[in-house]
Length: 119
Ligand SMILES: [Zn+2]
Ligand SMILES: [Zn+2]
Image 1 (spheres, helix red, strand yellow):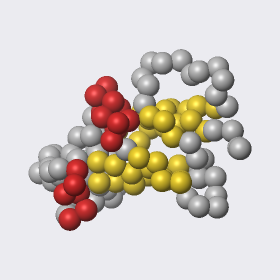
Image 2 (image 1 turned 30 degrees about the vertical axis):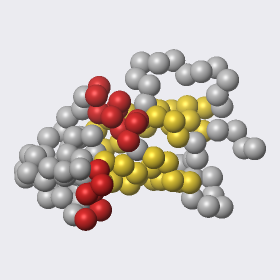
Image 3 (image 1 turned 90 degrees about the vertical axis):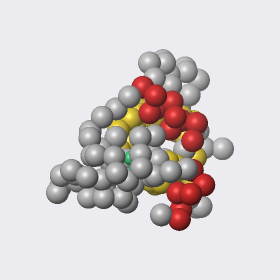
């Protein structure tokens, strides 16, 4: 997988397991980046899965992304915030993955998505 080299080793031998960990959200908040789609108020976020390190991209409904703040109350001056549950969408065939799960290693975590006011 050439596209994951910059982020380190993609551990494709990890068995599929539906797990989460507080550290997943913290790692993803610092390593994922938001990609604004031009001309539309939406975009994608991309980064390495915090469990297997496989590269993944997830579409978001609206622009504005800050990161994860687990257990933190939304700031009152924000338009809206929501916790989005992300699941690993890497393209490796992790051992033991159920047939109805086409992608990923099973890891999931929350990111706090902030929708900013239009300028
Ligand atoms: Zn993964
Ligand atoms: Zn993976």
